[in-house]
Image (cartoon, rainbow, N blue to C red):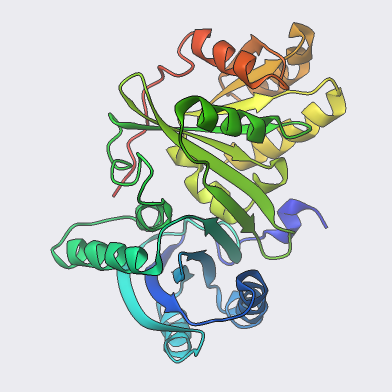
Amino acid sequence: MDDRQQEQCAGSAGETVARIVYASRATIRESVYAEMEKIRANALRHNNPAGVATALLHQSGWFVQWKEGPEEAVRDIMDRVRVDARHRDLRLVHASKGPRLLSGPWSMAIVQGQDHVMDMERRVLALQREVDAGVEFSPPAIWRRLSTPLQHPGAMQQQDPDAFQRVLVCSAAGTGSFELTDWLARLHGCDVVHRRFAGAQSTDVATDYVDFVHDGRVLRVIAMARHGLLLPLTRAFLPDYSLLVLLLAADADANARLMVRVLEALRPLPQPPALLALARHSQSHTEPAALARRCGLDYGAGVADPADPAGCWEALQTLPTALARPARACSQ
C-alpha cells in the first residue's frame, strides 16, 4: 500500500465541514507516543467511518486536537472525548464551518520543546482570551500558535507575512535537509525544534525546523523527511510555504521518486510554492525541471553539493528571488 492509499481522505474534498480545535492537559504517565498510537487506533475505528478527520499534537504536557467532519459526528465524538481519562481541563479554542483542510483521517505530531507545562497553559489561556474577544483564527493558525516553542523568534509573529517567511527543505536521498537546519542553528546560535509526524498507517517521520532573523524578518527553515510530504498534516500547511527547496541526489531514480511525491502534494494547491532544486551537477536538473514545468510549476536550478550545508545556503541566497520571494499571508 502506497502513501496515497494510506492517507485517503476521511471525506469528500471541497465539502463544508464543522472544524474544532481544543487543548487539554495530558494526564498520561507512560510513553506519550505509545499512548498516541492507541488514540490513533481508536480514532480510525470510530471517527473515520463517520467522516471525521483528526490531527493530534502533544507538546509540553498538553494535547491539541483538530477535528473536521459532519457537525453531528464531531459533536458526538467530542462527547466521548470530554470524559476520556487521559486528559483534563479541556478548552475549546476554535469552532467554525469551512472547507476540509485535513486530507486524511489521521495525523499526529510530537514537538520536543523546552517549555514547561505551565508555560503551555498560559499560552492556551492567552489564545482563548483572544478568541473570546472576537479574534478569528483558522485551524492551522491555532496549531501554529500552540506548537511553536515560546522562546523561538517566530512564536508571536507568524501571522504577519511582512515579518515571517517559511521555507520547506526535502532531500531526495540522505539527510541533507536536516544537516542544513542543524548548521543554520549553529550559525545563528539558536535551537532546532525537533518534531515527529505520523499518519493513519505510515511510520513516523522526522521534521525539524529552525527560526532566525534573515534580511529583516524571521525565516523558518523546515526539514521534512521525504516520506512525510503526503501526510495530511504536512499538506495542510503547504499553502504557507513561499519556497520548497529540493536537495537532489546523484541517483536519478531517487530524484524521480521525490518529484512524484512533491507533485502529488502540491497538485491541489491553487498557488503552490516555487520549487528551487540544488544538485551537485547541473545535468541532474534536466528531468526534474521538465517534470515540474509540465505540471505548470516554477522551477529554479542551482548547483551545490547537498552534503555541504554552507554551500547550499550560499547557493540559496545567490539565486534570483530565492529568499527574497514575498512571504504568503497566513489567514488567521
